[in-house]
Image 1 (cartoon, rainbow, N blue to C red):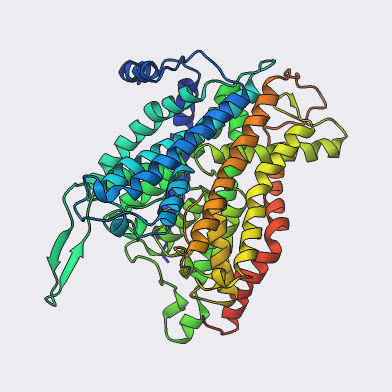
Image 2 (cartoon, one colour):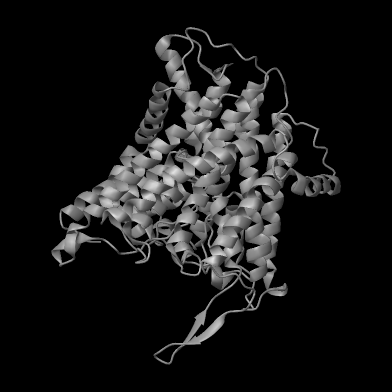
Length: 568
């Protein structure tokens, strides 16, 4: 490794912070209904959509009504996407003449894309028609991202409002998320991707003749448009099975950097939206700083692990034991590490390398990123929700320490908020552990493994962490296309999504009815360094207490075995 390799790692936090501040302020204006730079252009389409769907933007919803709208919209999305896959063989824009998707894969994919997970138990270019990719998967990339942003905005309103029973209108928040945020950003990213050589076409596959005289089928399609929203919406589902390691999805260093920046941008901007809507920007900075600190620590640990190399490779003559297995040469170690940390710190799931081929301790960090609820920026909307749940827990602990009723941003925290926060934090974690224990205890679970022992356990843990955390990336080495895994991962994705959003809306509803208590001399400050350190510590400690035993049996033991000379 040379110092120039670290340029993306050093540049990314700076560029991300600057863009996140501006985007966060812009989103606050959008959701407050204030005039923005794009209002003259987009106000008419917004009003037209309200008119044709019969939405009165001034009708506000209680948290229960908001939750029902969220649930119904998700159910409709799952049914529609499921039917589209089943019927794709009879529909147009199918130049490869692909038949219907098998029912369990179709169900798994429908749940996956509607819940913003984009877990793929299939090979994209060999399974989905152009119509399914565009009208099904790409549309859900927009909708599922917007559906994640809306509850986060409702939660912010719960903290900001006082003595009211309403949180806004789900349909208005959904519409504004798409029109004012996701569509403009996607247009910019798509143009950059196309300019760098990312494929965007409706032409059928290309039949090429290799130098050996053999016929080779080269798949193409409308890739750039899906690639852009895949990253910006923290979706992660690639057009190609190889995802962002495929040169048609990610051909240059600039597309690689833009992909990482895109998947981090909206989750990083939401803390600043939080601060702006609260009219307490220092609070937004405190949340952002906590996320960034955890992100940088993770990047540093993985770089150290990967640069150290594999001693088994060194023994067979590889200089320094440099482990390039599973990594694209054009990306290299540092860009692969930066992408891996970013995609697991958010709920994106896109990959430009094979996580299965990383060193065991690198895999441990990636699993940990997902398993703690992906609060290190996290998914669009859900990352902020989960971090605020940890903030509530932190303030409860602080209240116990100083012998005072816990408060956060002027709202007293009672047992209801604590219970809902614990559900947000622990539900995906418990589901991950339960489903993993079932998988390693049954032949149906073990039969899909390519590797047994500690590495096989890591593969199973990653699969359920990824689905329960609505991430969607795969460790590799596990055949997730079997009936056992398609059904169990479907359950994990549903519970992971709903057990995060519904309790968050309940918290918002109860907080909105409360008065705002003025800060006093005994109020614990939540905008300073002490709060940031406490919040980061609570995230790490809760994660360690929850997952230390199983991570010890998986990646940590594998690390010791490799340094003891055992290969897998």
